[in-house]
Image 1 (cartoon, rainbow, N blue to C red):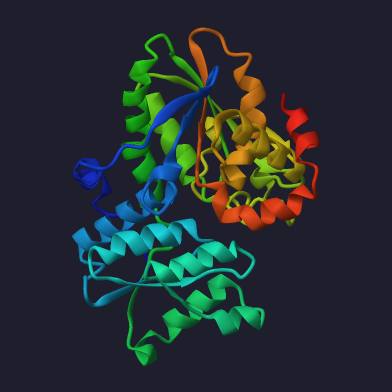
Image 2 (cartoon, one colour):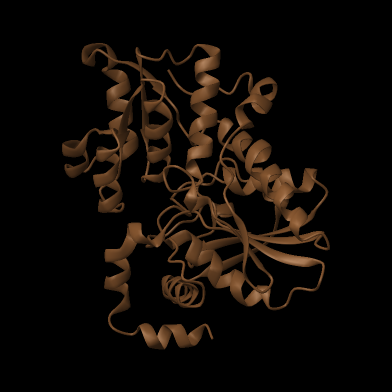
Length: 327
């Protein structure tokens, strides 16, 4: 069984109530950062996981104690599913590509997720093929699967349109003169970008959206190249990206993302993840140009500690040089 989105409109109010609020902070002059890395599970993805699972339980598509949730993920969505499902006594099985953070794969196992198809992945299967094989053999495996399918499940957008976006709008009251935002974001599924932008527009803000992509990728044209910024431009066109919201697209290199990551850590004390760093490489210089009624908004999707080995490898002893590029 695959994910369903029925009942989202009627249920959005109840699903969004009594949730922890992550901090919105002006980390640098003109730059507001939403610290989604402080959610349970360490990223914004727990919001989509909660909406999808809660909606499926409400519709009867997931039966706690009987159903098994299955998904392909690079890690963050898997953490969200593991945390949400644990409270409902729901087993979680995840196909995680071997190229993703090994630290994440290790901790997914620790929080109770079951990593499936490792041998298949080692033999060349894709995470999608692993999930499809398990769905086809569900009866033989004794499983009643619910495939959350984050790339097709509209609850991912609802989570941010009806929860994250309004949450940010409420927090923006601390900056009463600000009416215009430049939202610098990236897209995997496009759910958080589209949902947050819609939520802020509904709250009365003027929102320009800058989509950040790795150099060589063009999501609009479905053109992708291999890159090291996991979580963005993931090889398929973002299914939930509302292109009517996009004002501009910026291409960035891995080197510029690492430079922004290190500079941001030095100036603020926060070591942020790869996709956040890519966005900050655009957001930081842009923030210096904002007028009194404007701010740049970016999301701290997750922590850079997940990617520490890759950061050390990318550094090659030239931290000082890269930091100087951002001053």
